[in-house]
Image (cartoon, rainbow, N blue to C red; front, side, top):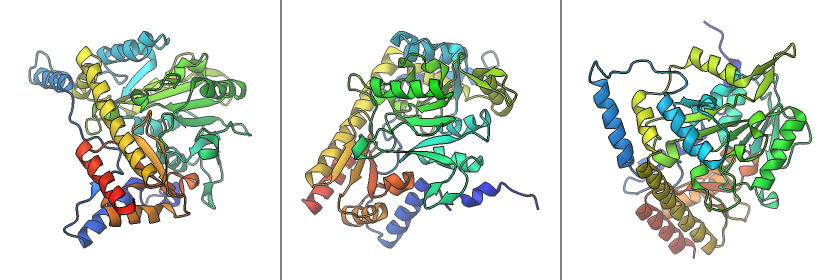
Length: 409
């Protein structure tokens, strides 16, 4: 038998969201007549935009004719999409990111894991606590996390986030080679200001660190002064990679399309000290291991940047933020502590009475008939919290919160 990657045996038996789904399925099996409203999963419920559907139909029609058929496309993404991203997401906002800095992918989750191919296994990785589990689990699989000791991986640097620091991590006391930051944040729903993010860019410059900045939820930002892109900070294009997704903004969770920005000014070094552009390394990695996102998906994504598409993004994100506001308000009415939801679709909730995350999950499932995501699955600082999302329908969100208020108020 072949020897396998021993790091897998150190991971939890199942991925957080798979365990949540398993528990919900078991509960429904034992309670045949019950209706469970899904407030846990970060999946959208509104359909694809008309402009996107039309563009995808056009792409399918092109693929039906030998004269317009597309086979393998550029691994970096088609120019029509890379140009649209550069223009609308960066250049029009006064940010000097060009199409050659942008790599289209099949989604943010893939790139978050795959980026580990271009930095050393010896790198010390810093993660927010709580954090999206992929940052930690990928580090475990790649052998950078070390051993699990009392709930912490001993080679990771934890950036604790709690109400005392407004869920904004403090700068690490030791040098971190790679830093994962996510704003607006999953799971806490909190965002970051320009001044607060400046400190991280300065830290990265002073310590030679790489920031991997997950801005998958930037389209939900409504508050002035809140950062949408790390490249709003001077010098960030020399220290940061940014990852974005069309999943939550344009309903592409099942279509799969996103992109990663690796500025050409961003440099690393080989073991012998010689410099190399990370853009060059990522391009080599992608051309070796990736054949590009599908033509149909990229045509659909390009339609997001039409006037109709941009209006649809605003309408969809407004809808989900309004749902999050309903959730936050309902939990505060019953005396729970609720955070986030203002510039994000996520609401982070604690009873404040010492109950652990799975106890709160079970209680709400049984008493109110809706599911949540236990905060402990996002790290030790998530214990005692649950995450809810605004991604269900307005009708289901109102129904779930009515059940909550009727039961607890």
